[in-house]
Length: 632
Image (cartoon, rainbow, N blue to C red):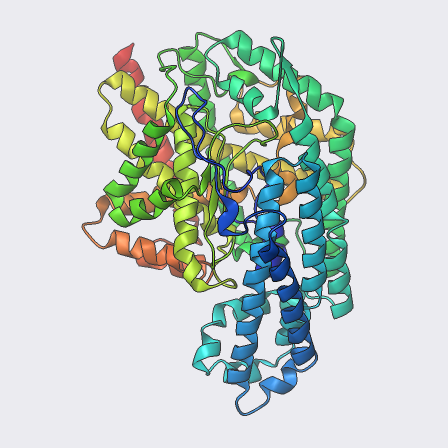
């Protein structure tokens, strides 16, 4: 997944609290594990941030950030309009922004460490307390800095334009422009501080409750009590009975906790409705579009294009899959079942590493070299552990440090693609770091570009090595399923969220309503080849994106469609593509998607753009059908 951003503001220390789905990390300094049949796997080393929870450097940085923030507030609060009017106003403002950025980076480092350490085991009371204490202190410190963006937005356009003639301030022009986009939705200073201060006991507290509840759940499968991640993994088992048992265990446990999940969803949806109403957002997803720096019309075009292709993509594919599995229709737990001839071999970690780095190297040695650091320097946490939540992420931390990648590696082919995906994020974050703490964060719509491109490189590498039509058939089917999960499933998620948030504005929602919304959008997106039993209705409740970043999910579809078009350009390019690609990633959040895609001849604001990306999947399914006929 990419960087999460607050609906209001680009302030890095604020973003870090919401940047990842509160996944799990590990204690600093642990060595690679060898007690696994998949071979030694790395566990990350957080000492590049701080040596430990009781590190004197951590306490010193916390005190230093408080001093710097206090001095900054004393120097600049209430004075920005006056400073900007001075003859050297541009230079004075540039100096202020540089100080502000320095505080951002320092607070971001502290927040990153607390979050990652807490993520190692959010049931560990020491980690939980440290994380909670740090976030409360950071919220208090950063509250005193909110004035800065507000006062910049009070500057008259002509005054700001004159200040931006200063070269040093002009460097921060994209960040200032982003602030100005948010000006219409800015509240009074006191209200902004209130929203900010209450976040730690509001949205943040409910999110934490969700995290800790989900991590503590155990699912009874054939006499074993499993956490969610390994239970979900059983839905990819070649044994249909095992898939069914795992799916029903998930149903039962989620239903046992449905009152809690429904309450969390109702509370957070209402919290968002209140914030949107006060800020004046017209649509339930507009705050996300603003933070993504993407126009509502572009997202609407994407959603409309994908929904129009449900029949030609997902419905068609799952009918083929039902035939391959010898079934009239698939049960929902068969959706990700392996194909009958698919190898059950578990892929050792070393092989996954070589596969991804080799694919990256085929594109550019520079890309492989950057990704290689994650393995060489223990920037990856790979093995499953008790208390480690489901999913994967690349946490960017701050530009003065480096990203950390987490995956739950279980040797499945999809795990190799997940590794490629998260390393794509990592490469992107390393390259964007030069933009600094204020402009390195990338809008979600482009944050998924490098990750999905990394997956595509790895897939094409594997496809080129296929030894037979049967191997090619299996690889194509797996890739199509991944693309359906990224495009169709995520757009269905987005449609579900729209139903939830629009209905919540009219009153509280029951579990039955939420289940019905889920079954409706899943049925529409997957088609009648998959049977939607009523028990599947509760599956909305474990998706962390709905809790931590409303409407985040369309970014995956945006990135997948974009990469399909981008890879087509790469395949046809004679030379120079790699350089332009690295320039795009290095821009971080300093440019709009339209400007970043222009060098490749692509324009996401053109409705036809999405049809081109979707046509790539249709073409793959066409080839799959031809291979199917050839092999039958």
